[in-house]
Image (cartoon, rainbow, N blue to C red; front, side, top):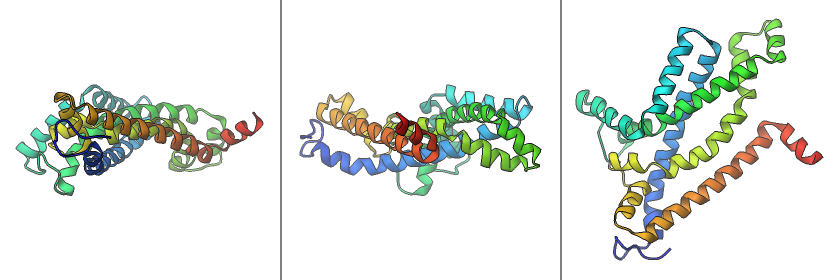
Amino acid sequence: MGPSYKYIGRDVTDIIRDTFPVSLTLGLLAVLVTLGLGVPAGVISAARENTLVDRTCIFIATLGISLPSFVLGTFLILVFSHILHWLPPALWEGPRHMLLPALALGAGFAGYIARLTRTTVLDVLSQDYIRTARAKGLKESTILIKHALLNSVTPIVSVMGPLTAGLVTGSFVIEFIFSIPGMGNYFITAVTNRDYPLIMGVTLVYAVLIVLANIAVDLLYVKLDPRVRLTGEKA
């Protein structure tokens, strides 16, 4: 991809090769945070529709969506690093350094997933086969997990495809705040210094990941919903 204008003597390919694993690790951890917080919150909210639990989950999800990642990241550093002294505020030197940036990056997207999961699960819970399952005496937990959640996972997968690519390469602000030596941090520096080869290199990597993520989503559709394959065969 050519030499960098800012980092003399280094090629853009070398910079991306060195920094992409850091951004990939941070992005995958953020995906775990997004799914680990968003999906259970959405299921619980749907199961307790129009109750205090439901309203609390919706409020927290909306708050997570509304707060920018840099505000949430700064707040987490203030609370867990400067007040409680539980976690380090910056750098990338071990598992303890990964918790705050992963939480700051994934919490906002967890709000989206929670709202989406709630909507899709509520739609599935109104179907006839759910009423049949309840009439057979199945446990509510079995109905929620085995029937409702598994049959409403397709919209979540469609969102998580490009969202994963965005989390892996789009953590620019979080990497800058937490002084993480990832691709996003270098991208901000490249924009500031008009390092066009590095900007184009990072943008190209992001575009490739978006394409691969959408292909992966299409392949998962066939596994999750056989009706997609049958419709394609008929066409």
